[in-house]
Length: 82
Image (cartoon, rainbow, N blue to C red):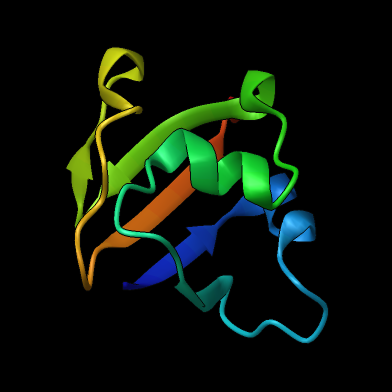
């Protein structure tokens, strides 16, 4: 199935070289979960803070729920500032 995978801030370094706009189109198996996709790209799960699927927050307890065709997975690290 086809998805859009987006990584922001410091996590964008895990996207393939030449990736534009912090996103890449990917083709994955039908049972792929957010955690599986993050692991596929080598993103340390300890660095992941905010996960959204189609703009909806996904709590850590639900990040092993399979994605569906056309989903957009967007991920941010924890951001500090003031």
